[in-house]
Length: 239
Image (cartoon, rainbow, N blue to C red; front, side, top):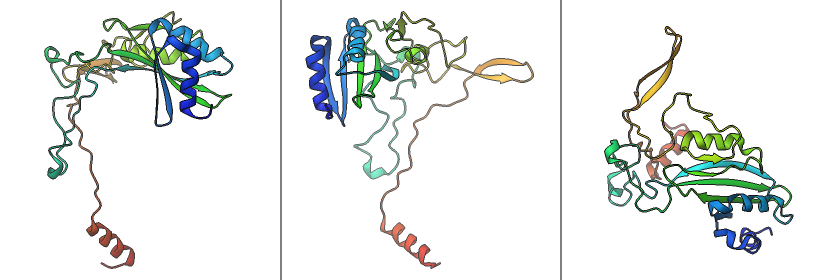
């Protein structure tokens, strides 16, 4: 089963109706499962001798709010050079009353697991969408792959995804008094607060955020014969 397409077909045969969909793109295989099959599929992936996904490389949360939207105008400004950024379209650049709505997606939050079979040299991506957008939750995988402990805590901290059965589900990256989940697409980039350590007060203090959100326009380097000639003259020592 060296080819990803072969692995995908084998997974469909072994797991059957427990898989919602299987796809292969850019040499990588992805399966999607329902929340109720999250644990059973994970155990099969780990315990089936022909699969043997014994290592969980990563667990991450995904917020599909504003998925497919862009802050770049790539069709009407090709003749204008670098001014391709479009202000105000991306999530986080809005007032709370005008926050983006997930009208075009069935479920907003998902959990993605990256697995590796050392014995078979296979890599697999497994994804499941959380049923409830208000309190997104999935069963914890700690009992199957103990190394997911801190990964799940990170997803809980940054996305607010609850992993049921986790032995110690608490924040791991943000401050204990932090409000909200910073990687959610509707987390405001304007009007929030930032923290810093005040050496005079000898404690962490909260202040209005000082970062002004903006669309970063990357520098674009295009092929130009003038540059090639200048480089050739420089290498030849011509001033």
